[in-house]
Image (cartoon, rainbow, N blue to C red; front, side):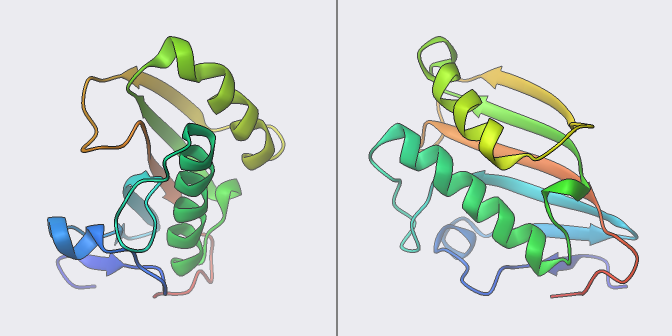
Length: 135
């Protein structure tokens, strides 16, 4: 394995190149996924908060799939929120549809003041299942 085994989804959005980061890095059987926001392909945010959250989860699913993973393989989640009190009910409703059955991953939610024009971000660590494909 190279020093950095980078993983990118097939339909990568513009932010990876614009800000010079990898969607995820594979290290052994672990996948460290960079923060996924509700970015359209051109790098702009979805204007409606719920759509931004759904798009962040969709972008996360695409990165996980590129590494042969699904949300069932996620061990740890950190979510970042620009206005947690106002946004949390929406995030919880979308999360309920996205994360599947128990046992749930560890999850930490953090309130922040800035996300480069976005209002929600997901960062995860996943275990790549045996036979997981490389991108």
